[in-house]
Image (cartoon, rainbow, N blue to C red; front, side):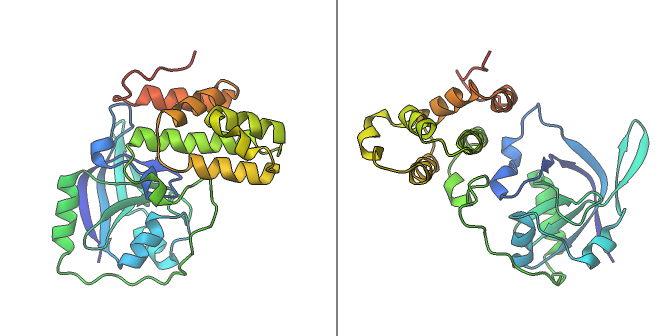
Length: 255
């Protein structure tokens, strides 16, 4: 039998592959679309399965999909809508998941601290439900979704800008144009141009991405602005991030 939580606030992240793409409660902004789930099932799982759902977009077990089918609901314009959303907990961590009509965790959200504590307390004496799944190794060199350790210590704004920067670079350098790669490297680190003059395009792109993947500072912001000025899609995403963030200080949208 499923347990249910009621009136749970959720801030869904669509297509989150890494857990840093899901904002913690203290990172929620007034511009985020916060949903109220009037009822949502929750259950305890093993730590490995929690990680499988949290860091990836892999297929969920069929028995899980069947058990949560239309068990959650929310209200919109006084009309009740049923959902396949659910909450999992490994005894320490809590995550809301909404597969929609699919078999993958397309949307994820953390909970507010009070609701997290309630879920953990209610499950503390329960045994985790065992689901059959195949663990998946992290994809190496998945630059579109950098590994979690490269985002540790960064704010939500910094993580989003860094991810967008890497996406913009990969798009711009997708044609393997050596002159373009040299240009973007000069924008990144003009003082080190002598050290890259003998690199072929693949090695240069690899070096640039590897350097950009470390940390986050003003150089990252400057390179992203330069790329955004040449790519209208990246520019739109950049402005959306800046507009959403309430703590961006002097950072300005691009005209």
